[in-house]
Image (cartoon, rainbow, N blue to C red):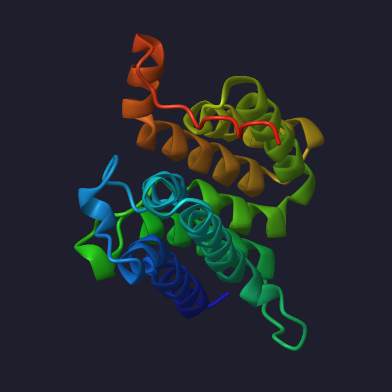
Length: 211
């Protein structure tokens, strides 16, 4: 395959990943998300900060950010697979796209190379390429969050679960390597959260009161 296709997949993936939805959505509510909460423009911080300021409306805005961040990952990984676009090694191009999208999300050219931790974007991209492994990761995240109310802990454990499931399923080596690399990247991006978890100072999402 011509290296032009790999460059195109990387460029498209990076630009898609760089779209700073968290910053834009928060700004639409009059909030500079880089100066609020943890300073992270990811969905979790947006939901926490806007939820505190605007209640249910703010929490919905955080959920919207998660969906948009996942969609950009899915588009970065999935466009080579669109029917009618016949490309050689299209799934490898999808891997290039999702890696670039995660990097773009974390180091966005539109926000002076600041960004989020890549969880939603990685999930959106990998679910296109390895849906079963991502389903395992989603279950791990949901169970962990339901039991502990720690988003960060769910994300870290999901980052371990997805590549583990990919290897156990016998996916092609490039897929396993990419899933592992992205999982490690997500864990590294959560290093401060891990320190706070170990110190018992990590913030939880409070449960909704009954009724």
